[in-house]
Image (tube, rainbow over all chains, first blue to last red):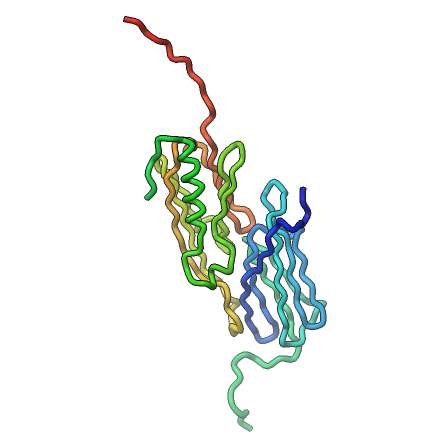
Length: 108
Length: 139
C-alpha cells in the first residue's frame, strides 16, 4: 500500500478568504479528507494546509496541499479549524484590525 | 442519453468511456486545472463512482435509478460567514445532473450510494454470474 508515492496526484483545493471584524476566515473544499489526515500549520506568515484523500477502504488517492500568504498578523495560538461535509473552515483571529466598513473621517 | 448495448464487454467499455467523458471539465481552463467532479474505478464487484460534493448536505443530493437509468443530481450553495468582507472567492456555487444508462451487466437493484466527507461514493455492482442449463426439448 503506497503511502504517498509518485503515483498519487497532488491536488490544490480552492479557497475563499473572508475578513470579519476580528478574524480572517478561510474556507476550502477538501472532499475525501478525514480529520486524521489533515494538518494545518502556520509558519512565518504562511499558512499550510496539507492532507491525504482516501477511498473509504483506506488507500490514499491523492495528496492535497495549499499554501497561502497571510497579509495580516494572525494569532497563531487561537486558530479554529472545522471540517464538515468535506469543507474546511479556518478562523484566524487578527488582533487590532480595522472593521470591514470603515467610513470617512470621524466626526468630532 | 446513451443507449442499451447488446454486447456486455462493449457495454463495459462504453460505460467506462461515458464516465470518462462525464468527468471531463465542461467549463473553461480554470475548471480544467481542477480535479474532475466525477471519477470512476472498476474492481471485481463492479464500478465505483466518486463524485465530489463538498459542502452539500445529504438532503441536497439525489440518486435515482429508474429501470436501468441512473440519475445523479446535487446543488451546492456556499455559506459565507455573516458580516464578512470577501477578499478572495475561488469556490463557486453549482448544481449538476448526470444521467447514465446502466448497461445490462450492472444490477440496478443493487446500486448503493454513500456520502462521506463531502464525497459521494456510488457502487454499481455487476449482476451475479449465473449459469443455467437449458434443457433441449424434442418434439
